[in-house]
Image (cartoon, rainbow, N blue to C red; front, side):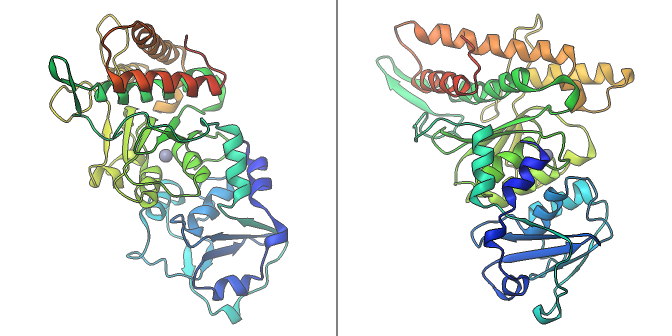
Amino acid sequence: MDLETFRAAVQDPSTWPALTTDFADAGKRVAYYNDGTSTFYAVTETASVIRPLWLLTMARGKAKALKGVAVATNYAASLNDRSASETGIMQLTLDGMPTISKPDPKSLVAPRGSIYRISLGQRLRDALANQFKVPAGVTMVVDDIQSFTASVKGDSGYTTAGTRTVHRLYLAAAYILLHKKHTTSSKDGVVAIVADKTGNIVSWGMKNPLVSCWHGETSALMRLGGSLSAGGCVFSTLKPCKMCAGLIFDASAGGTKAYYGQEDAGSDAQDTKLDKARLGAALDAHKGNGVPRGLVVATPEKKALGETLKAGFEAQKGTGIKNPIEYITSDAAAGLMAATEQALKQKITKYKATGPSNPNTKRAVEYLVEFLRLQGVSPE
Ligand SMILES: [Zn+2]
């Protein structure tokens, strides 16, 4: 979905109430600013954690769009009151603080020019759902998607239940989508998949090159209206930046974890809210207890994918490639991502065979194949 489609989806003139009414309504969070020709006006529903300041930045579609402008809100976005996602988006795109005031509703200036009302309403969610399809209905893929240590009792006693492999397979699905769906020149090189507690994929998204703060994670979360059920996971091909980490943290009803394949050494992804809360981890080559193992691909060295991508990026830094997203759109990275598809194919072949099998892994493979087929991608 491009920026114009996004704007069309978020504008719904038939539901525009007077600005003063929204400002007086304590049940809503409202913010607006006027750039001289247009009024940008954002409202969130009571249940949403995504505050209007964040939505205003999204809707402008340009980095630093709010820098130096006066923003009026009906809530006090003071330094202490600011949510993790607002803090994140400020750190990522604003490069400074807008002037935020909380005016008396009676003193508000009337909206002028074109009015863009931005919300996480159903039209936006439908548009995103149409672009990023997920399987219908609820499927219990695993008992607990956050588990790395589950075991099952079989004829020969307890065995591990393949839960580490499950995480790697979800991330493999994200890389397969990235490999198949991104267009080389457009810097759309991030895919994020959101799974609920039982592994059911409830949303996914891809970085939108037209909207600077519309990342894989943020578009996946907008489709969910800005809320995440407790106990789920986000699988992102790239480490979530400050904005996305803040949003995942804010949106979660409880402890959503984020796993990622590609490290991002840039300052935008350091010391994020997920890092601080210890809710984010690279699926990398560690083998210790409780630590996720890497998405190993069929390279001669059998290195974890995240490490191989990182090494490839470091090696290409001097050749004009500036960041991990640029690197991921290179031919070298495409070859590595294609290898993840081979890894999933091997699992599909293995789990088609009869005989003892790991139930968690078997269900995850079947489910992910169905999910990928829905996107027009068949790894078989
Ligand atoms: Zn991000």
